[in-house]
Amino acid sequence: MMVLTMNQTQAPVSESMAHIPEEGDFNLIELWLRFDIPRLIAGAMAGAFAGVIMAIAAGLFALVGGHEFLYPVKVAALPIMGNVATNYGMHLPAIALGFVVHEVICIVLGMVYAQLTQTNKLLPLLGAGFMWGTFSWVFIQNLFARSFLAVRTEELPSGVAFFVLLIFGFSLSSVRLFDRMLCGRTR
Image (cartoon, rainbow, N blue to C red; front, side, top):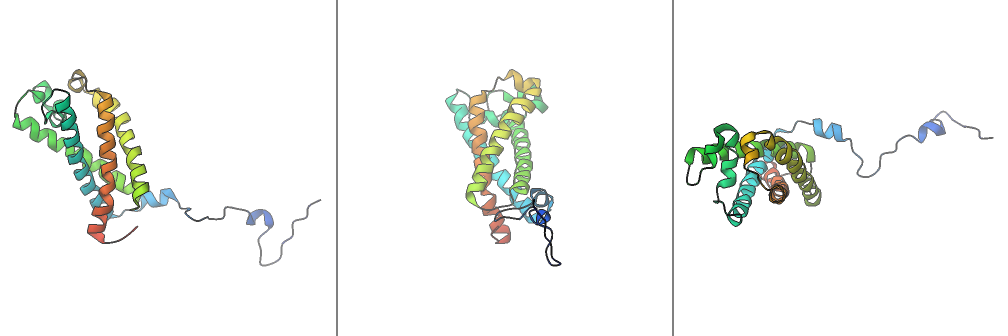
């Protein structure tokens, strides 16, 4: 027979076995709900940077695939301009609109990435970048973008898009540089 003992300074043994915080234990929801404007700005800057890196990588893949270098930027203008956006040549309205749409999406994703990571340690940022690139490939490339008929008719290769979006995700780890530039702090 087991007897619970309790003195006036201790809680009962059954209650004292409740959650004991360990090293590295933290509340994710509390972290994610913290509104840190400099971190969001750093995320926007990292998103814009990662968007440019992604556009360059996609342009190189497009050249290998027989398209022009700016073809991936023009693809972002397809939902608004229709099939005329990907006409061959320097179609400046399509290039400008495509770049703006592409960068706005990348900036928003960079801000969400920065809000959810809340660290400047490289390995966790790269891990989150892998997850973010994979998330972008599944939900943005394969579900959202294909909901537009003009994008779907282009038959963009999903395998190449996966590598391009992984480059985007890994490039988002630049948030650590922008956060340190803005605030000079280490997280």
